[in-house]
Length: 102
Length: 228
Image 1 (cartoon, rainbow over the protein chains, first blue to last red):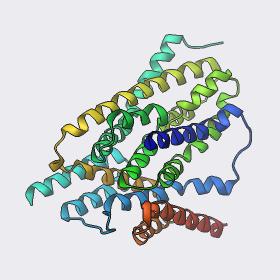
Image 2: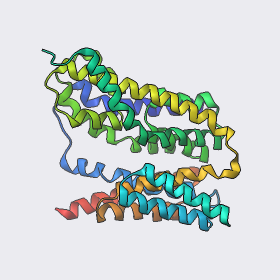
Image 3: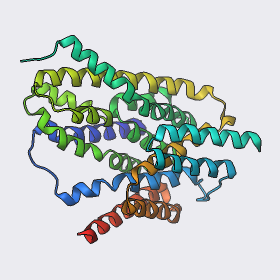
Image 4: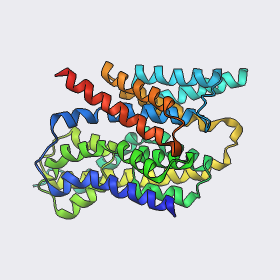
C-alpha cells in the first residue's frame, strides 16, 4: 500500500513537471542559473545512486575483480561512445567472462 | 492545410519511435531485475509503468524502496531524477501553442526523453501534422514500454540468481553517469556525489543517497556561480 502511494506520488509529480509549461502555455522560462543547475542533476543523482547500489547494509563496498573490471569497462566505453546500451552489454560480457575464467 | 496524408504521418511516427526504443530496453529489463531482487509483487511493480511512465524514475523509486529507504527519501530522489522533464516542457511549449487543450494534457503524459528528442528535431509548420505524428510516436513508445516492462518482470524471476544479473543495475547506471559527464564541472559534481554517498552511507533509511545528491548539486551551483 505504501509502495503504491509512493508510485502514485512520483507519477503525479512527474506528470506535473511534464505538463507545467505545455498545459499553461506559459511563456515564462527559467532563470539561466536554474537551467544550468539542471545539467548537474544527472551527475549528482547518478553518482549517488551508483554508490548506493554497490554498498551493502553495513556500508561496506565489497567488489571482486570481475565487478571492478565490469564497472571500469562500462564507464570507459560509455564515456568514449556516449552509448549506455553498448557500455552495458560489453561490460556485462566482460564481467561474465572473468567470472567464468575465475 | 496539411501537406501529408494522415496514414503517412502515423506510419512515420511509428517508424521513428521504434529505433529510439533501443536505448530504453535496458531500463525495461532492469525494472524486471529490481522487482525480482526486492520481491516486489509483479503487478505492483509493473503499475509504475503506466502511472509514472519514466524508466529512470521508476527504477530509482523501486530500488530505493527495496533497499529500505524511507518513502520520503525514495520519492524525492525519483522526482529529482525526473527534474529534466521541466526542461522538456519549457522547450516544447511553443510547439503546443496552437494545439487543442486535450492534446496538451495528453501530450504531457507522453513526454518522455525520446519524445522530447523526436519533437525538437523538426520544426513542424502544420499543427495538425505535428499532433498526428506526436500521438502516433508517443503511443507506439507507450505500448512498447508497457509490453517490455511486463516481459522484464515476467522473465526476471526465471533467470537464476547465480548469473549475477543484479550487477547489471550498477553497470547501467555507471554508464549513464559517464554519458552525463561532459566537462570538468560535471565530473567534479559526480565525484563529490560518490564520495559523499560513501561518507553518508551509515545514515538511517538510506537518507545518505538523497543527502549526497543534494550536496553535489550545491557544489554544482557553486561552480556555476564561480564561472561567471
